[in-house]
Image (cartoon, rainbow, N blue to C red; front, side, top):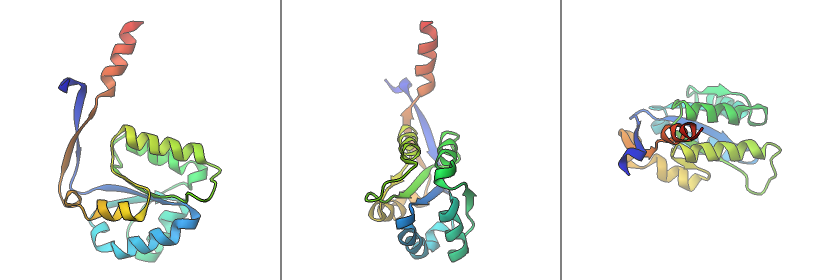
Length: 156
Protein backbone atom coordinates (compact mmCIF):
# COMPACT_ATOMS: atom_id res chain seq x y z
CA UNK A 1 0.00 0.00 0.00
CA UNK A 2 2.91 2.38 0.65
CA UNK A 3 4.00 2.32 -3.01
CA UNK A 4 0.66 3.95 -3.77
CA UNK A 5 1.92 7.19 -2.21
CA UNK A 6 4.71 9.66 -2.80
CA UNK A 7 6.20 11.99 -0.21
CA UNK A 8 5.69 15.69 -0.86
CA UNK A 9 7.83 18.28 0.87
CA UNK A 10 6.46 21.68 1.82
CA UNK A 11 9.62 23.65 2.47
CA UNK A 12 10.21 25.95 5.41
CA UNK A 13 9.42 28.95 3.20
CA UNK A 14 5.79 28.42 2.24
CA UNK A 15 4.36 29.50 -1.12
CA UNK A 16 1.02 31.00 -0.13
CA UNK A 17 -1.83 32.06 -2.41
CA UNK A 18 -4.06 34.77 -0.92
CA UNK A 19 -7.51 35.22 -2.46
CA UNK A 20 -10.68 36.93 -1.26
CA UNK A 21 -14.03 37.71 -2.79
CA UNK A 22 -14.98 41.39 -2.95
CA UNK A 23 -17.09 41.23 0.21
CA UNK A 24 -14.18 39.66 2.13
CA UNK A 25 -11.18 41.63 0.83
CA UNK A 26 -11.12 44.05 3.79
CA UNK A 27 -11.17 41.13 6.25
CA UNK A 28 -8.30 39.37 4.49
CA UNK A 29 -6.33 42.61 4.27
CA UNK A 30 -6.75 43.19 8.04
CA UNK A 31 -5.65 39.60 8.66
CA UNK A 32 -2.53 40.06 6.50
CA UNK A 33 -1.65 43.25 8.39
CA UNK A 34 -2.03 41.43 11.73
CA UNK A 35 0.16 38.58 10.49
CA UNK A 36 2.64 40.59 8.43
CA UNK A 37 5.62 39.53 10.55
CA UNK A 38 4.97 35.86 9.79
CA UNK A 39 3.92 36.36 6.16
CA UNK A 40 6.99 38.40 5.22
CA UNK A 41 9.15 35.28 5.60
CA UNK A 42 7.15 33.40 2.94
CA UNK A 43 6.44 33.74 -0.79
CA UNK A 44 3.06 35.38 -1.38
CA UNK A 45 0.90 35.50 -4.45
CA UNK A 46 -2.69 36.48 -5.10
CA UNK A 47 -5.33 37.11 -7.68
CA UNK A 48 -5.84 40.54 -9.25
CA UNK A 49 -7.33 43.08 -6.88
CA UNK A 50 -6.59 41.09 -3.73
CA UNK A 51 -2.90 40.80 -4.55
CA UNK A 52 -2.61 44.48 -5.45
CA UNK A 53 -4.38 45.58 -2.26
CA UNK A 54 -2.09 43.47 -0.10
CA UNK A 55 0.98 44.78 -1.89
CA UNK A 56 -0.11 48.43 -1.67
CA UNK A 57 -1.43 48.38 1.92
CA UNK A 58 1.32 46.28 3.50
CA UNK A 59 4.40 46.75 1.33
CA UNK A 60 4.79 42.97 1.17
CA UNK A 61 5.95 41.57 -2.17
CA UNK A 62 3.09 39.71 -3.87
CA UNK A 63 3.18 37.94 -7.23
CA UNK A 64 -0.07 39.01 -8.85
CA UNK A 65 -2.10 36.79 -11.16
CA UNK A 66 -5.21 37.75 -13.12
CA UNK A 67 -8.46 38.50 -11.35
CA UNK A 68 -10.39 35.36 -10.38
CA UNK A 69 -13.19 35.78 -12.95
CA UNK A 70 -10.57 36.44 -15.66
CA UNK A 71 -8.70 33.19 -15.06
CA UNK A 72 -6.71 33.96 -11.91
CA UNK A 73 -8.23 31.04 -9.99
CA UNK A 74 -7.16 28.72 -12.80
CA UNK A 75 -3.67 30.23 -12.85
CA UNK A 76 -3.35 29.57 -9.11
CA UNK A 77 -4.62 26.01 -9.64
CA UNK A 78 -1.97 25.41 -12.30
CA UNK A 79 0.69 26.66 -9.89
CA UNK A 80 -0.56 24.18 -7.27
CA UNK A 81 -0.30 21.35 -9.81
CA UNK A 82 3.28 22.42 -10.62
CA UNK A 83 4.23 22.58 -6.92
CA UNK A 84 4.79 26.34 -7.07
CA UNK A 85 2.04 27.05 -4.51
CA UNK A 86 1.66 24.87 -1.44
CA UNK A 87 -0.85 26.75 0.70
CA UNK A 88 -4.16 28.42 -0.15
CA UNK A 89 -5.92 31.05 1.91
CA UNK A 90 -9.15 31.76 0.04
CA UNK A 91 -11.60 33.81 2.06
CA UNK A 92 -14.80 33.40 0.11
CA UNK A 93 -18.17 34.96 0.64
CA UNK A 94 -20.70 32.17 1.22
CA UNK A 95 -23.64 34.59 1.03
CA UNK A 96 -22.81 36.09 -2.37
CA UNK A 97 -23.22 34.23 -5.67
CA UNK A 98 -20.07 34.26 -7.80
CA UNK A 99 -20.20 34.24 -11.61
CA UNK A 100 -17.00 32.16 -11.75
CA UNK A 101 -18.18 29.55 -9.24
CA UNK A 102 -17.03 26.60 -11.44
CA UNK A 103 -13.49 28.03 -11.39
CA UNK A 104 -13.61 28.36 -7.61
CA UNK A 105 -14.76 24.76 -7.22
CA UNK A 106 -12.02 23.61 -9.60
CA UNK A 107 -9.40 25.48 -7.56
CA UNK A 108 -10.61 23.99 -4.28
CA UNK A 109 -10.72 20.54 -5.88
CA UNK A 110 -7.14 20.75 -7.14
CA UNK A 111 -5.96 22.00 -3.73
CA UNK A 112 -7.57 18.90 -2.21
CA UNK A 113 -6.10 16.55 -4.84
CA UNK A 114 -2.62 17.88 -4.09
CA UNK A 115 -3.34 17.86 -0.34
CA UNK A 116 -2.20 21.40 0.44
CA UNK A 117 -3.37 23.34 3.51
CA UNK A 118 -6.49 25.37 2.66
CA UNK A 119 -8.26 28.02 4.73
CA UNK A 120 -11.65 29.30 3.64
CA UNK A 121 -12.18 31.49 6.69
CA UNK A 122 -10.01 33.55 9.01
CA UNK A 123 -10.26 31.18 11.96
CA UNK A 124 -8.77 28.36 9.89
CA UNK A 125 -6.16 30.75 8.46
CA UNK A 126 -5.15 31.64 12.04
CA UNK A 127 -4.83 27.99 13.00
CA UNK A 128 -2.67 27.28 9.94
CA UNK A 129 -0.40 30.31 10.17
CA UNK A 130 0.21 29.86 13.89
CA UNK A 131 0.93 26.14 13.53
CA UNK A 132 4.44 24.89 14.26
CA UNK A 133 4.56 23.70 10.63
CA UNK A 134 4.73 27.30 9.39
CA UNK A 135 8.33 27.57 10.54
CA UNK A 136 9.61 24.16 9.50
CA UNK A 137 9.67 21.77 6.59
CA UNK A 138 6.63 19.51 6.37
CA UNK A 139 6.72 16.13 4.62
CA UNK A 140 3.53 14.24 3.95
CA UNK A 141 2.43 11.44 1.64
CA UNK A 142 -0.06 12.05 -1.15
CA UNK A 143 -1.50 9.54 -3.54
CA UNK A 144 0.77 8.91 -6.53
CA UNK A 145 -1.63 9.66 -9.36
CA UNK A 146 0.99 8.90 -12.01
CA UNK A 147 0.66 5.23 -11.09
CA UNK A 148 -3.10 5.41 -11.68
CA UNK A 149 -2.50 6.94 -15.11
CA UNK A 150 0.03 4.22 -15.98
CA UNK A 151 -2.51 1.53 -15.03
CA UNK A 152 -5.20 3.19 -17.18
CA UNK A 153 -2.84 3.35 -20.17
CA UNK A 154 -1.89 -0.31 -19.72
CA UNK A 155 -5.57 -1.28 -20.07
CA UNK A 156 -5.62 -0.05 -23.65
